[in-house]
Image (cartoon, rainbow, N blue to C red; front, side, top):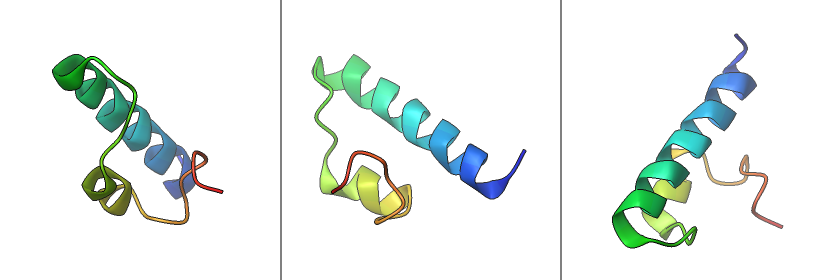
Length: 44
């Protein structure tokens, strides 16, 4: 498993937790920072 794979898996994991907690897919900035800002596929 490469670092990129692990980063993507972590992002999905965080996104799922956020979805469970808030009922939305809207990720707060802190989770984006934790998952490596700029590496996220949801960022432009």
